[in-house]
Amino acid sequence: MAKLVSLLISARQQRDIAIAIGFLVFALLLVASTFLAATEARRSMRAQSRFALEQYAQLRINLDDTFGAITTQVTAAPCTRVFQSQLRRVAFLPDGFSEFLYVPNGRVECSLSVISMATPVALGDPDIAPSEKSPSEIWIDRGLGFAGLQGLVGSIVKRGDFAIVVPPQKPAFPASSWFEREVVLNGTDGRYWHRAGEVEVYDHYKIAQGPRAPWLDTTLRALVCDEYERYCVASEASAVGLFQTWKVYVFTAITLLAIISAWLAGRVKSLIVKRWSFEARFRRHLDAESVICVYQPIIDVGTGAVVGCEILARWRDVDDSIVYPDRFIPLVEKHGLTAKFTRLVVQRAFAELSKTAPCDRKLKLTFNIFPRDLKSEILLDIFKVFKPLAGRFDIVVELVESDQIDIEDAQRQIETLRKAGIGTYIDDFGTGYSNIQNLAGLTVAGVKLDRAFAMAPDGSLMAKMLLHAIEMIHESGRAIVIEGVETAERLESLRQLVPPVDFAQGYFISRPLDVERFAVFVAGGVPIPGRLQLAA
Ligand code: C2E
Ligand code: CA
Ligand code: CA
Image 1 (cartoon, rainbow, N blue to C red):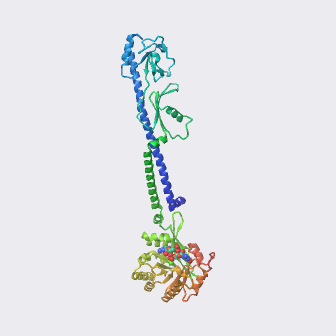
Image 2 (image 1 turned 90 degrees about the vertical axis):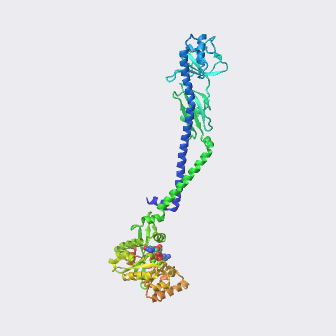
Image 3 (image 1 turned 135 degrees about the horizontal axis):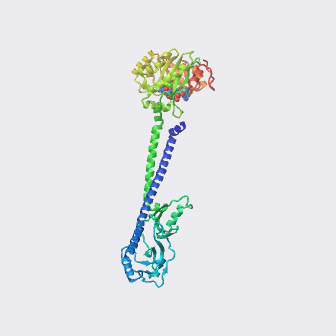
């Protein structure tokens, strides 16, 4: 789960996820629309095939009617003049048939055109034998010279003693350039005859259905047969042919799909960002569990004893990574969560320190507060948890000067806090808005000099200013803390200063520690690798 969450919260991954989703959506839409287009194309092929088959259905109806007419109307003795004139009358029916044969015992004895054959002509075995569904015997595409119709070809359909000559049919296919079709006539023994359209379309269809079908067939195929499975229309449309015919539509559709996918990917990304951006996560999960405190020891410069610590906040992200204040403090301010946040820090520190901090000395706990929260009623309420432990802990709030501070009001608040036992220090003195006048106007208990002083090289302007600042603050009777002490030399040189700096804090003394390690550090028990071993 944490792994999945960490995927969602990285900005790069968010973008990659959105791109992947975009491609996936595009692919799915492409597959779905190809499927829909293929279904629609096949539907259209089938509809046109059915239309072509109607002509053959009509042919069958006409055959039935004409055989009916022959049975009822041709009653004279076969192969006589009367017989012939009766046949002629049937031939005048508007059914497309104009030649009839009299075929007793499979031999043509006379026809409409030939009143009597000199020698009866045997038709031989039919190409299509009668079946349950169709009582006719059929000879396909026979030369009709024997019946006096030199040069003509037709199929002969025989029922009983009569046969009808069926001329070749021209199916009325609607014009279409995007698929090919073939009409075939199926025999009863698996043979079939090409009747119209493009030769081999039916063959291709059968191959595609059989065991030798290619594994990837991009050709669309359809087969529609009449109810007797006799006439069938096979049709096929190659992907390339389809693409060429519908080029403009295909490009338009692909462009549309790409636009839809990109839009969706954008929506997904903004949803992910909205839910999983750092800002969203921080706001959603800012609670007692996610706020972490670390404690950076502060020592008395003269004796080296640990006098207290500065409480620094961290935030545990949803993937369990630890976030530093530079990322979340601006959000706390932006969303008006300052008092809530300070309360969470104070409660956490109370829970940890009251349980774990050593009881053999009083510790000064320094909390950072937001300038806008410099209101005694808010702060007294937040810090009241420490009241019962006033014998173990002194509370100090550190305040960065800012343009949000109204000096007169600040002075009143600081005074109220002081009376309630909470000291106020000016933080980061020497930077930003801090100035000497403000300092003079505020009865703060101490001043924390900015890291820049501690880092200033000996003899530099900053180092000289440090001396002046120390002198001035010392004279006003306020405690001086210097932070950002990173080397033994710097600590040593601070020790030599006159007037002296009271307290010091910095990586050389100790990095911010979790509460257990802080407790051990206070007890002087642990040599922290590479760090000064301090006298307790
Ligand atoms: P800050 O109040 O000036 O806190 C001191 C910062 O300097 C801390 O950074 C600390 O880890 C770092 N530091 C300590 N010793 C040294 C050193 O020797 N060298 C260097 N280069 N740095 C050192 P951190 O913990 O990242 O805090 C940054 C800032 O976030 C703090 O600056 C403070 O303004 C703010 N902050 C932290 N916790 C809280 C909080 O609970 N409430 C409020 N309002 N602000 C907080
Ligand atoms: Ca501070
Ligand atoms: Ca500071």
